[in-house]
Amino acid sequence: MPKHPSMKSPDEPTRTVRPRTFLGRRYPLATPPPRKRIFLRQNQFFIGACIVLLLIGYYFMATGGITDLVVSINKHRTPGRDNFFKVLTKFGEPEAYAVLVGIFCLLRFRSAIFVVLTGAAAGVVTGILKTIFGHARPLRYIFDNDEPLWYTLSRFDESFYRNSWAYTSFPSGHAASAFAVFGFLAFNANRYKIPVAVLCFLFASLVAISRMYLLMHFLKDVTVGATLGLLIAAAMFYLQFKVFPDRKGLDRGLLTRF
Image 1 (cartoon, rainbow, N blue to C red):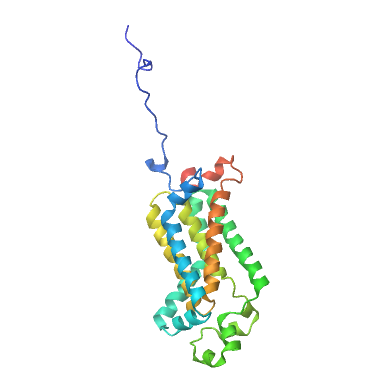
Image 2 (image 1 turned 30 degrees about the vertical axis):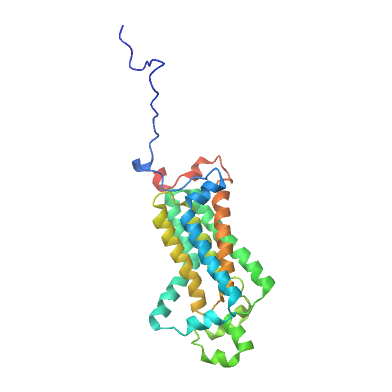
C-alpha cells in the first residue's frame, strides 16, 4: 500500500519549517537578548568605541585644565566649521528624535514610543543634575576666572554668560541626548549592525564635540553627559520589552501592518 505523503517513518529526519519574515528577509529590528553578555557581543563595536572615547575623555579631564580643550578648539574656528557644527549640534535636539520616531513607526511601534521616552529620560536626568550642580558654562566661567582670556575668544552667543542658562553647564544635555538616542538606535538595529553602529557613533561623538566647539560646554560636561546617555540607551532598550510584553500589536510597524 503506498504511503501517504503526510505520513513519515520514525527514522526520517524532521525538516524545520522556517517562518516567513517581512519581505523574505531577516527582521530589521533586534529582539531582547536573553543574557547581558549576548547584548555586549551583539553591540561590541558601538559599546567598545564609546568606551574608548569616554576613557580618552576622562583621561584628559584628569590630566588637563578645565578650560584647556575648549580654548584650544576655539582657536581653530573657521566659517565652514562654524556652519558644520551648528548643524551637527541639532542632532542632539528634539528634531533628531522626531526623525527616529518616524523611522521606528514604520518598523515597530514599541521602539517608536521608547524613542520619546529615551529623550524624556535624558532630559529629566540632565535637568535635575544641572539644577543640583549649577556649574558655569565656559563663557561665564572664563569671564569670572580669567577675564583677559575671555576677550581673546571667538564668541558665538555672548548672552550665555549673562542669562539664566549661564549656570547649567554640567552635564551636557545635548551629549546625553545624542548618545541616548543614537545608542538606542544602534542597539535596536538587527540588519546592517556595523554600518548603523558606525553612523550612530559618529553622529553622537560629533554632537558632543560641537558643544565644546560652540563654547557651550566643557570636556567634563560632554563626557559625563555621554556616559549617562549610553546608560539610558541600554536601559531603555531592555525596558521596551518589559512594558506590555503581551501587546503583540506594539511589535509591528506600519510596513508590517499594511
